[in-house]
Image 1 (cartoon, rainbow, N blue to C red):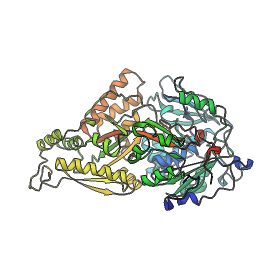
Image 2 (cartoon, rainbow, N blue to C red):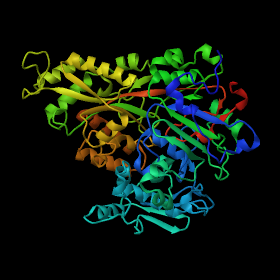
Image 3 (cartoon, rainbow, N blue to C red):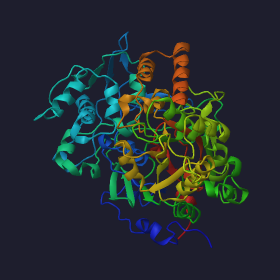
Image 4 (cartoon, rainbow, N blue to C red):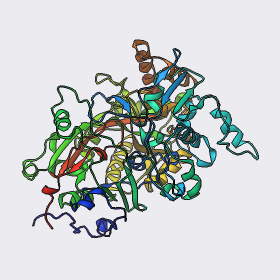
Length: 610
């Protein structure tokens, strides 16, 4: 049986796609009678919303940069990644001490039309970025990204936030601050208390969080703003059924932007894409439809049956039926299916809550407990059985492709030694005191781990490994399943004892990987709630130092501290194994950024009939 473009064989899992209603302002291809170019695929976890100031999850942050635009972006084909202007008019300038940065906004860029603008065409100006940045500091938004913004030490922004937090206070968006200024309609100036040699590339080369929003839109929609994103980008939200369907359509008012890139001379794939698309106006797609399919099997079947055009992250349990060893199987290749593989710029890890009475604390016995738990985790078995060989052991929190990553670095993070683990537990009094076969705390109270998890198949398989590993050490472990977003919220609030998740790098610099250990990021990225003044000093130095041998040496010291105190167990760096049907043209997985749909085309002549 041949595959069809709108196969509905998966029933409820794909029902949202079958009932899609197109918006009245149809894309340009509709006017010519040409088939619409629609890209369809699935997220495996539901989105949270589309207000940049209120999100942190990958899935929401994959939508937002296609709607909102930051000052800069990354070259789609350049490897290693290269920053280039997006809405900025040229590259930034800075003072000699790296405390002052100036950026020009390109004139003639407009927000998509919206009732909030009352019929007026609204131009993007420098004040829009100032307002957008201030929204992260506004306590009313409860922004998970505030800790990152606070760390930039923009002069005056912390005082603005503190005034809002005071009894009877409010956040004054109209109050000028020294660190965020519009020198004229199109000129932005940033001033910091401390030097920041990577200020722009680290914070303004991604649009998922730092894209510009318009104040009129925020005030018009109020609490409903997560469902009303209005930006200057290539797409706009056309339809949203929460946790079911997200549909974006080409922004018909998007300015003239043309495909251009700088792939390396030895990058045959990149050179071929450039030759094919150079000069094409972006975006090339008319519509993108994202369904939410949490379980791996229906997501896999959706692709095989042609109900999805692109399969990002082939599920590990199906990798041998698709791309064993990273090579596409011949039967799939004969169908024209394309396979892609790349080591992710991310790390999968488990954290232990440092405020928890059982696993937290900084005394030698608590450190010994955490290190013993982590020494008892069999990473090689996890890679072989659960991840089907699609990962490499992680030696530190630093991700591949980033500045301080070293493929030759080795640490206890990847070591599996039940003998060492048991010796540590015995030495510090974590022994079986009542003869029931399970270890107790040194004071005789129960030693029980409570691991938060999700009710999906991969999480269950990982939990089985944890059960096996901890049972071998004589440690009881219980599992508390909940939806990912629920765990995310509880994790930030410090309510979970332990949880496993993954995080990707947002840029080439590796400092962000260490934010999970900075006390400034407790309540945000620092899920373990790790507080170590000596580490904070190193972290601050790394943020302010220019690149060079001295900075790399300091990264090595930071890595050693992460192993010694063991608030996190870094498990693996996973492979991305992606697949696309033959009609999907131009796909290339980004390294650090989340927007790429504007660079994809659909060859409608190759679409299945029916």
